[in-house]
Image 1 (tube, rainbow, N blue to C red):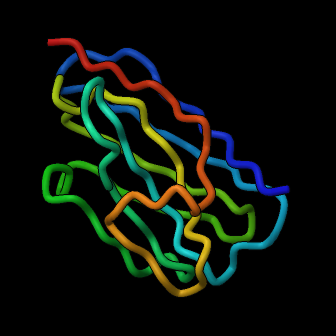
Image 2: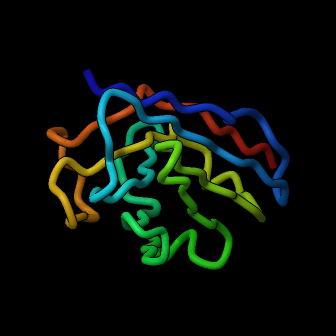
Length: 125
């Protein structure tokens, strides 16, 4: 059974930083993209970042590019999201995702992918 467990969320002041982590278990994900989505109250879940199986290919939402950095440790089945220069607009529940199909990712929310339970990030002004 696949399980994703996020950690690292919390409360931070605007301009601060946080590092999210996600540990995946239950099978090997050596050919799968991993990534992060977020969902703010009253809004749809939106793509944040994704990283390919090699760790060399990354994709970001325009709103976080140059502020967030995604990385992964494939040997440990973990993915991280370093977030800097946070603003109140970054406040959301952040979800870890492992894309079910090998060598494929999408910026669209797909409930058939593997999802974590989410970790809350709150940025105060």
